Image 1: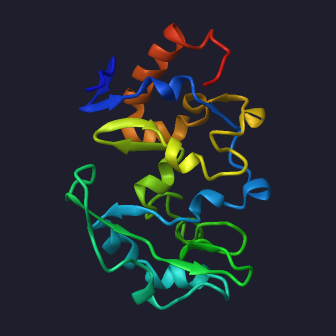
Image 2: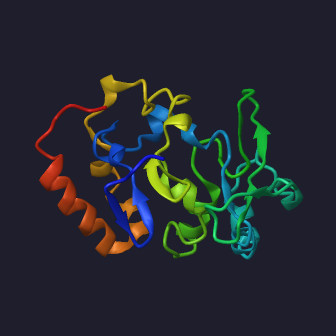
Image 3: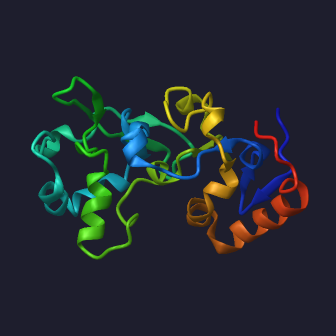
Length: 205
C-alpha cells in the first residue's frame, strides 16, 4: 500500500499535487468547460440540495438543456465510501445540437447552470454545486486528495498531456479549491509544506 507523508483531518495528501503542472487558470474561451462533459458523481443526499433550487436552475438553462428534472440524475446509485453517505448519484448527460454529449447542467457557453443560478440568486458560487465539480483537477480517491489524472487524459487544454500549456503546479492553481476542501488551516498547513519542500523546484510532472 502506498504511503503518504502528509495528512490533514483524516485526509491523506498525494504529493503529486505539488509537482503536477497546470494551466494559468480556467479559460472557458479555450476549453469550453470540457471537464464537464462527462457529468459528475455527488453524495446521494446532495441531490436534494440541488433540487431545492430546481426553479432557479431552470431559469438560467439555455434552450437546449432539459428542464425535465426526471432526466437530471442517474437512477442507479453507486456504492462509494469516499462519499459521506457511502452512496453516490451521477448527473445525466444530454447531446447538444453539435453532437457533443455533456452534463445536463452544462449550457451552450460551457457554464454550469447550477453555479450560474447560485450567483444570480446572490449565493456563494459553490453553494449548491457538487463537491467534485468544484475540486477538479483535484479529486479524492480512497480518502486521498490527489490529481485526477484519469479524467485529465481526455482534456485538450489543461489535460495531463498538455505540458506546453502549464505555467504552475496544481497546488498553486487550486488555492480556493483546496481551502474549500480542507479549510483555511488545511491550506495553510499544505502551503507551508509546499514552500519548504517544492516551491524552489521548477520542473512539472
